[in-house]
Amino acid sequence: MYFSCNTAYGSLPVFLPTFLQTSLGFSAINSQGLTAPPYFLSFLLTFSTPYLADKLQQRGLIVALMSLIGCVGYIILAAATNHWVQYFGVFLAAGGVFPAISNILPWVTNNQGSDTGRGVAVVILNLVGQCGPLLGTNVYPTTDGPRFVKGHAVCAAFLFFNTCIALTLRTYLSWQNKRMDRKYGTLEEQHARLALGSVDGEKKADAQHIAEAEDEKSRKEGYVATEDYGPLFRYIL
Image (cartoon, rainbow, N blue to C red; front, side, top):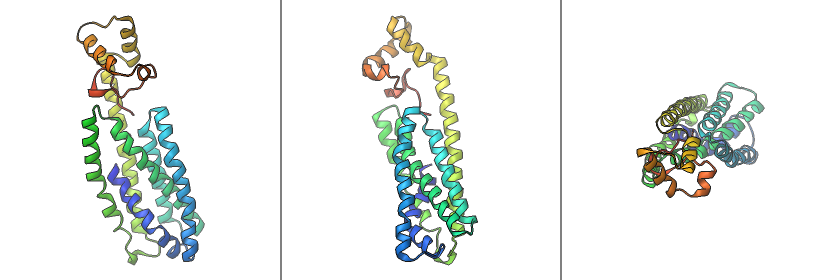
């Protein structure tokens, strides 16, 4: 996912002023100024969508939605001929790509059961994902101007692919959570048993060990990220 988003993420800031000037016919100064509104929209969404995802515990749907919005934006850029329609596509592209990135990064780290896992995940994520800009910055050759249809099509395809990956991963993580619910009981059931002291056998030892390690406030608020993939661990969807 990070690679797919980074393909568009790496190319959009580099080529947007050139695209506005050569494709939409704005002057050099106006092209620089017209990049600000789409970036401001993406700034707002980059801060608000992770907050919303935290509240809803639904990062996968947010990633898929933002990727799909960016995909539609690039399709408009590739297909439309009206300058202002294309400029609207820039808003969708910027408003989709940047927030998608800001939700992918915490989604990866949230779903690791230990500090070691989070560290390794970040390394692998960046090792693979940062190759995306190498592709993204080479799909807009000057020979494709002034419309740059190929570059827009490549970015749209990667963002659509990213949407599919996010939904597939969310489905898989949901299945894993249900499997753990069947094995250990739901989080509500486990907390109730801990409160009553009625957990028996191995489940009791595991659950009590994790519960003692957790902060009491976090347990009451229903946080699901517990270390070491224990009975109280659940994946963020």
